[in-house]
Length: 348
Image 1 (cartoon, rainbow, N blue to C red):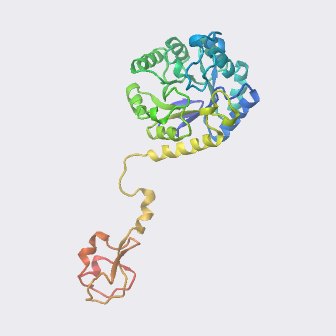
Image 2: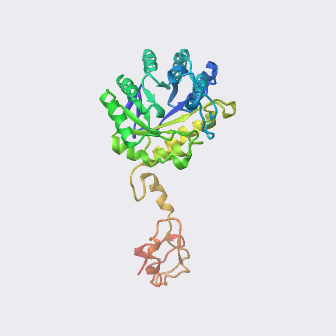
Image 3: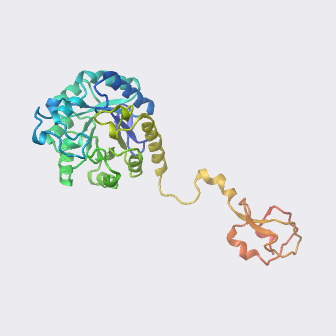
Protein backbone atom coordinates (compact mmCIF):
# COMPACT_ATOMS: atom_id res chain seq x y z
CA UNK A 1 0.00 0.00 0.00
CA UNK A 2 1.20 3.51 -0.85
CA UNK A 3 -0.17 6.59 0.90
CA UNK A 4 -0.15 9.96 -0.84
CA UNK A 5 -1.60 12.90 1.07
CA UNK A 6 -3.89 10.62 3.03
CA UNK A 7 -5.11 8.62 0.04
CA UNK A 8 -4.18 4.95 -0.09
CA UNK A 9 -3.20 3.21 -3.32
CA UNK A 10 -3.22 -0.57 -3.48
CA UNK A 11 -5.25 -3.74 -4.03
CA UNK A 12 -7.35 -3.10 -0.94
CA UNK A 13 -8.56 0.25 -2.28
CA UNK A 14 -10.55 1.38 -5.29
CA UNK A 15 -8.43 2.18 -8.37
CA UNK A 16 -6.56 5.47 -8.16
CA UNK A 17 -7.75 7.51 -11.17
CA UNK A 18 -5.47 10.21 -12.58
CA UNK A 19 -6.78 12.83 -15.00
CA UNK A 20 -3.87 13.92 -17.21
CA UNK A 21 -4.30 17.49 -18.44
CA UNK A 22 -1.21 17.53 -20.65
CA UNK A 23 -1.65 20.20 -23.33
CA UNK A 24 -5.45 20.22 -23.29
CA UNK A 25 -5.46 23.64 -21.61
CA UNK A 26 -4.90 25.07 -25.10
CA UNK A 27 -2.71 27.80 -23.56
CA UNK A 28 -5.53 29.19 -21.42
CA UNK A 29 -5.18 29.26 -17.64
CA UNK A 30 -8.93 29.67 -17.17
CA UNK A 31 -9.49 26.56 -19.29
CA UNK A 32 -6.83 24.72 -17.28
CA UNK A 33 -8.63 25.55 -14.04
CA UNK A 34 -11.94 24.48 -15.56
CA UNK A 35 -10.34 21.14 -16.46
CA UNK A 36 -9.33 20.77 -12.80
CA UNK A 37 -12.89 21.55 -11.70
CA UNK A 38 -14.43 19.06 -14.11
CA UNK A 39 -11.95 16.33 -13.18
CA UNK A 40 -12.85 16.80 -9.53
CA UNK A 41 -16.58 16.78 -10.26
CA UNK A 42 -16.12 13.52 -12.20
CA UNK A 43 -14.47 11.94 -9.17
CA UNK A 44 -10.83 11.73 -10.25
CA UNK A 45 -8.43 11.24 -7.36
CA UNK A 46 -5.55 13.16 -8.91
CA UNK A 47 -4.86 15.79 -11.55
CA UNK A 48 -1.54 15.61 -13.38
CA UNK A 49 0.22 18.14 -15.55
CA UNK A 50 3.60 18.16 -17.32
CA UNK A 51 6.56 20.36 -16.46
CA UNK A 52 8.87 21.34 -19.31
CA UNK A 53 9.61 24.07 -21.80
CA UNK A 54 10.30 23.68 -25.48
CA UNK A 55 13.95 24.49 -24.73
CA UNK A 56 14.27 21.71 -22.13
CA UNK A 57 12.71 19.18 -24.49
CA UNK A 58 14.62 19.79 -27.72
CA UNK A 59 16.33 22.49 -29.80
CA UNK A 60 14.82 24.99 -32.19
CA UNK A 61 15.53 23.08 -35.39
CA UNK A 62 12.82 21.96 -37.80
CA UNK A 63 14.79 19.82 -40.24
CA UNK A 64 15.36 16.06 -40.33
CA UNK A 65 14.55 14.17 -37.15
CA UNK A 66 13.48 17.37 -35.40
CA UNK A 67 10.23 17.29 -37.36
CA UNK A 68 7.55 14.59 -37.10
CA UNK A 69 7.55 12.71 -40.41
CA UNK A 70 5.23 9.82 -39.54
CA UNK A 71 2.10 10.39 -41.70
CA UNK A 72 0.05 8.39 -39.17
CA UNK A 73 0.93 10.71 -36.30
CA UNK A 74 -1.58 13.22 -34.93
CA UNK A 75 1.24 15.76 -35.14
CA UNK A 76 2.59 14.89 -38.60
CA UNK A 77 4.56 17.72 -40.17
CA UNK A 78 5.12 19.66 -36.95
CA UNK A 79 8.55 20.58 -35.68
CA UNK A 80 9.18 19.15 -32.22
CA UNK A 81 10.11 22.56 -30.82
CA UNK A 82 6.91 24.15 -32.08
CA UNK A 83 4.79 21.27 -30.78
CA UNK A 84 6.27 21.50 -27.29
CA UNK A 85 5.96 25.27 -27.34
CA UNK A 86 2.24 24.86 -27.99
CA UNK A 87 1.68 22.00 -25.58
CA UNK A 88 3.72 23.05 -22.53
CA UNK A 89 2.07 24.24 -19.34
CA UNK A 90 3.56 27.60 -18.31
CA UNK A 91 5.40 27.13 -15.06
CA UNK A 92 3.69 30.09 -13.41
CA UNK A 93 0.39 28.21 -13.85
CA UNK A 94 1.53 25.24 -11.77
CA UNK A 95 0.80 26.68 -8.36
CA UNK A 96 -2.74 27.91 -9.15
CA UNK A 97 -3.51 24.56 -10.80
CA UNK A 98 -2.25 22.60 -7.80
CA UNK A 99 -4.07 24.92 -5.40
CA UNK A 100 -7.34 24.43 -7.30
CA UNK A 101 -6.86 20.66 -7.18
CA UNK A 102 -6.24 20.84 -3.43
CA UNK A 103 -9.41 22.86 -2.92
CA UNK A 104 -11.31 19.91 -4.42
CA UNK A 105 -9.44 17.35 -2.33
CA UNK A 106 -7.55 16.08 -5.37
CA UNK A 107 -3.83 15.32 -5.46
CA UNK A 108 -2.01 17.61 -7.86
CA UNK A 109 1.33 16.48 -9.27
CA UNK A 110 3.39 16.51 -12.44
CA UNK A 111 5.71 14.79 -14.88
CA UNK A 112 9.10 16.55 -14.90
CA UNK A 113 11.16 16.20 -18.06
CA UNK A 114 14.52 17.39 -16.76
CA UNK A 115 16.28 18.26 -13.51
CA UNK A 116 15.28 21.93 -13.62
CA UNK A 117 11.63 20.85 -13.66
CA UNK A 118 12.22 18.65 -10.61
CA UNK A 119 13.84 21.55 -8.77
CA UNK A 120 10.87 23.77 -9.56
CA UNK A 121 8.33 21.15 -8.51
CA UNK A 122 10.20 20.56 -5.26
CA UNK A 123 9.71 24.24 -4.43
CA UNK A 124 5.97 23.64 -4.90
CA UNK A 125 6.21 20.57 -2.64
CA UNK A 126 4.47 18.19 -5.02
CA UNK A 127 3.67 14.90 -3.24
CA UNK A 128 4.66 12.48 -6.03
CA UNK A 129 6.18 12.30 -9.51
CA UNK A 130 5.60 10.61 -12.86
CA UNK A 131 8.20 9.66 -15.47
CA UNK A 132 6.84 9.59 -19.03
CA UNK A 133 7.41 6.67 -21.39
CA UNK A 134 9.76 8.61 -23.64
CA UNK A 135 11.94 9.43 -20.61
CA UNK A 136 11.96 5.96 -19.03
CA UNK A 137 15.46 5.32 -20.38
CA UNK A 138 16.76 8.66 -19.04
CA UNK A 139 18.39 7.04 -16.02
CA UNK A 140 19.99 10.27 -14.75
CA UNK A 141 16.53 11.87 -14.62
CA UNK A 142 15.02 8.83 -12.89
CA UNK A 143 17.84 8.88 -10.36
CA UNK A 144 17.32 12.59 -9.70
CA UNK A 145 13.56 12.23 -9.21
CA UNK A 146 13.92 9.10 -7.07
CA UNK A 147 16.37 10.92 -4.79
CA UNK A 148 13.49 13.09 -3.56
CA UNK A 149 12.17 10.00 -1.76
CA UNK A 150 8.64 10.67 -2.97
CA UNK A 151 6.34 8.08 -4.60
CA UNK A 152 7.31 7.58 -8.22
CA UNK A 153 5.19 6.43 -11.15
CA UNK A 154 6.95 5.31 -14.33
CA UNK A 155 5.25 4.52 -17.64
CA UNK A 156 6.69 1.45 -19.33
CA UNK A 157 5.91 2.32 -22.96
CA UNK A 158 8.44 0.90 -25.44
CA UNK A 159 10.77 -0.37 -22.68
CA UNK A 160 12.38 -3.78 -23.06
CA UNK A 161 12.79 -6.08 -20.08
CA UNK A 162 16.44 -5.07 -19.80
CA UNK A 163 15.47 -1.39 -19.84
CA UNK A 164 12.79 -2.02 -17.23
CA UNK A 165 15.35 -3.74 -15.02
CA UNK A 166 17.67 -0.76 -15.37
CA UNK A 167 15.02 1.84 -14.59
CA UNK A 168 13.64 -0.01 -11.57
CA UNK A 169 17.11 -0.70 -10.18
CA UNK A 170 18.11 2.93 -10.72
CA UNK A 171 15.00 4.23 -8.98
CA UNK A 172 15.34 1.93 -6.00
CA UNK A 173 19.07 2.48 -5.52
CA UNK A 174 18.46 6.25 -5.60
CA UNK A 175 15.98 6.04 -2.74
CA UNK A 176 12.59 5.29 -4.27
CA UNK A 177 10.56 3.13 -1.90
CA UNK A 178 7.07 3.64 -3.30
CA UNK A 179 7.20 2.67 -6.99
CA UNK A 180 4.31 2.19 -9.41
CA UNK A 181 4.80 1.01 -12.99
CA UNK A 182 2.14 1.86 -15.57
CA UNK A 183 1.67 -0.51 -18.50
CA UNK A 184 1.63 1.84 -21.45
CA UNK A 185 1.51 1.70 -25.23
CA UNK A 186 3.13 4.82 -26.64
CA UNK A 187 0.94 5.41 -29.67
CA UNK A 188 -1.67 8.15 -29.86
CA UNK A 189 -4.33 6.94 -29.89
CA UNK A 190 -3.37 3.39 -28.98
CA UNK A 191 -5.25 0.34 -30.23
CA UNK A 192 -6.69 -2.22 -27.83
CA UNK A 193 -4.99 -4.82 -30.04
CA UNK A 194 -1.51 -3.71 -28.96
CA UNK A 195 -2.27 -2.85 -25.35
CA UNK A 196 -1.52 -6.32 -23.89
CA UNK A 197 -2.91 -5.77 -20.40
CA UNK A 198 -2.01 -9.38 -19.53
CA UNK A 199 1.44 -7.90 -18.94
CA UNK A 200 0.17 -6.17 -15.78
CA UNK A 201 0.36 -9.17 -13.42
CA UNK A 202 3.68 -10.19 -14.97
CA UNK A 203 5.16 -6.75 -14.25
CA UNK A 204 3.90 -6.97 -10.67
CA UNK A 205 5.49 -10.38 -10.18
CA UNK A 206 8.80 -9.45 -11.81
CA UNK A 207 9.37 -6.17 -10.03
CA UNK A 208 7.46 -6.56 -6.78
CA UNK A 209 5.63 -3.27 -7.05
CA UNK A 210 2.20 -1.94 -7.80
CA UNK A 211 1.23 -1.77 -11.47
CA UNK A 212 -1.39 0.30 -13.23
CA UNK A 213 -2.13 1.50 -16.74
CA UNK A 214 -1.49 4.67 -18.68
CA UNK A 215 -4.18 4.23 -21.29
CA UNK A 216 -4.17 6.05 -24.63
CA UNK A 217 -6.97 4.01 -26.22
CA UNK A 218 -10.33 5.57 -26.97
CA UNK A 219 -13.06 5.09 -24.37
CA UNK A 220 -12.72 3.35 -21.01
CA UNK A 221 -13.01 -0.36 -21.84
CA UNK A 222 -9.29 -1.11 -21.81
CA UNK A 223 -8.81 0.66 -18.49
CA UNK A 224 -11.61 -1.38 -16.94
CA UNK A 225 -10.02 -4.56 -18.27
CA UNK A 226 -6.76 -3.50 -16.63
CA UNK A 227 -8.51 -3.25 -13.26
CA UNK A 228 -9.63 -6.87 -13.67
CA UNK A 229 -5.91 -7.67 -13.99
CA UNK A 230 -5.33 -5.91 -10.65
CA UNK A 231 -4.21 -2.51 -11.94
CA UNK A 232 -4.22 -0.17 -8.95
CA UNK A 233 -3.76 3.07 -10.93
CA UNK A 234 -5.48 4.36 -14.07
CA UNK A 235 -4.19 7.36 -15.99
CA UNK A 236 -6.21 8.86 -18.84
CA UNK A 237 -5.74 12.08 -20.77
CA UNK A 238 -8.64 14.40 -20.01
CA UNK A 239 -10.23 17.33 -21.81
CA UNK A 240 -13.42 19.36 -21.57
CA UNK A 241 -14.52 18.63 -25.14
CA UNK A 242 -12.64 16.82 -27.86
CA UNK A 243 -14.27 19.14 -30.37
CA UNK A 244 -12.31 22.05 -28.87
CA UNK A 245 -9.15 20.62 -30.40
CA UNK A 246 -5.70 20.70 -28.88
CA UNK A 247 -2.57 18.60 -29.05
CA UNK A 248 -4.01 15.65 -27.12
CA UNK A 249 -7.74 16.05 -27.60
CA UNK A 250 -8.16 13.20 -30.10
CA UNK A 251 -7.34 10.52 -27.50
CA UNK A 252 -8.58 12.27 -24.37
CA UNK A 253 -11.77 11.42 -22.51
CA UNK A 254 -14.47 13.96 -21.69
CA UNK A 255 -16.08 14.62 -18.28
CA UNK A 256 -18.93 12.13 -18.64
CA UNK A 257 -16.45 9.41 -19.66
CA UNK A 258 -14.19 10.19 -16.72
CA UNK A 259 -17.17 9.90 -14.39
CA UNK A 260 -18.03 6.54 -15.94
CA UNK A 261 -14.41 5.43 -15.51
CA UNK A 262 -14.37 6.32 -11.82
CA UNK A 263 -17.68 4.59 -11.13
CA UNK A 264 -17.17 1.51 -13.29
CA UNK A 265 -13.53 0.93 -12.28
CA UNK A 266 -14.68 0.82 -8.66
CA UNK A 267 -17.34 -1.72 -9.61
CA UNK A 268 -14.80 -3.90 -11.40
CA UNK A 269 -12.50 -3.67 -8.38
CA UNK A 270 -15.34 -4.63 -6.05
CA UNK A 271 -16.24 -7.60 -8.25
CA UNK A 272 -12.79 -9.23 -8.16
CA UNK A 273 -13.23 -10.72 -4.70
CA UNK A 274 -11.80 -14.20 -4.17
CA UNK A 275 -12.40 -17.72 -5.47
CA UNK A 276 -15.79 -18.75 -4.08
CA UNK A 277 -18.40 -21.46 -4.70
CA UNK A 278 -21.87 -21.96 -3.28
CA UNK A 279 -24.29 -19.24 -2.20
CA UNK A 280 -22.79 -16.06 -0.86
CA UNK A 281 -24.24 -14.51 2.26
CA UNK A 282 -26.10 -12.05 0.05
CA UNK A 283 -27.67 -14.94 -1.91
CA UNK A 284 -29.01 -16.77 1.15
CA UNK A 285 -32.46 -15.20 0.90
CA UNK A 286 -32.66 -16.20 -2.77
CA UNK A 287 -32.37 -19.93 -2.07
CA UNK A 288 -36.11 -20.09 -1.37
CA UNK A 289 -36.79 -19.21 -4.99
CA UNK A 290 -35.11 -22.30 -6.43
CA UNK A 291 -37.30 -25.06 -7.84
CA UNK A 292 -38.36 -27.98 -5.67
CA UNK A 293 -41.04 -30.70 -5.65
CA UNK A 294 -44.51 -29.59 -4.55
CA UNK A 295 -47.86 -31.29 -4.22
CA UNK A 296 -50.13 -29.53 -6.73
CA UNK A 297 -53.43 -31.40 -6.11
CA UNK A 298 -55.19 -32.43 -2.88
CA UNK A 299 -54.34 -36.08 -2.23
CA UNK A 300 -55.38 -38.73 0.29
CA UNK A 301 -53.38 -41.27 2.23
CA UNK A 302 -52.31 -44.24 0.06
CA UNK A 303 -52.66 -42.36 -3.23
CA UNK A 304 -49.86 -42.92 -5.72
CA UNK A 305 -47.47 -40.02 -6.38
CA UNK A 306 -47.63 -39.11 -10.06
CA UNK A 307 -46.82 -36.34 -12.46
CA UNK A 308 -50.43 -35.24 -12.09
CA UNK A 309 -50.25 -34.49 -8.37
CA UNK A 310 -46.63 -33.36 -7.93
CA UNK A 311 -44.46 -31.04 -9.99
CA UNK A 312 -41.11 -29.28 -9.88
CA UNK A 313 -41.94 -25.61 -9.26
CA UNK A 314 -40.79 -22.59 -7.37
CA UNK A 315 -40.33 -21.96 -4.43
CA UNK A 316 -37.62 -24.18 -3.04
CA UNK A 317 -38.97 -25.58 0.24
CA UNK A 318 -39.74 -29.08 -1.06
CA UNK A 319 -37.46 -31.95 -1.98
CA UNK A 320 -34.79 -31.02 -4.54
CA UNK A 321 -35.75 -31.72 -8.19
CA UNK A 322 -33.09 -34.46 -8.40
CA UNK A 323 -35.45 -36.73 -6.37
CA UNK A 324 -38.38 -36.34 -8.77
CA UNK A 325 -37.96 -39.70 -10.54
CA UNK A 326 -37.34 -41.38 -7.18
CA UNK A 327 -40.72 -40.39 -5.71
CA UNK A 328 -42.92 -41.08 -8.75
CA UNK A 329 -44.94 -44.29 -8.19
CA UNK A 330 -44.64 -44.29 -4.41
CA UNK A 331 -47.59 -43.64 -2.08
CA UNK A 332 -48.52 -40.75 0.17
CA UNK A 333 -48.50 -41.61 3.90
CA UNK A 334 -51.14 -39.01 4.80
CA UNK A 335 -53.66 -36.62 3.34
CA UNK A 336 -51.87 -33.65 1.79
CA UNK A 337 -53.23 -30.28 0.68
CA UNK A 338 -52.41 -28.66 -2.64
CA UNK A 339 -49.43 -26.31 -2.30
CA UNK A 340 -47.58 -28.42 0.27
CA UNK A 341 -43.82 -28.88 -0.25
CA UNK A 342 -43.10 -32.57 -0.71
CA UNK A 343 -41.02 -34.04 2.14
CA UNK A 344 -39.79 -37.57 2.91
CA UNK A 345 -42.22 -37.95 5.83
CA UNK A 346 -45.13 -37.63 3.35
CA UNK A 347 -43.88 -40.55 1.28
CA UNK A 348 -44.22 -44.30 1.92
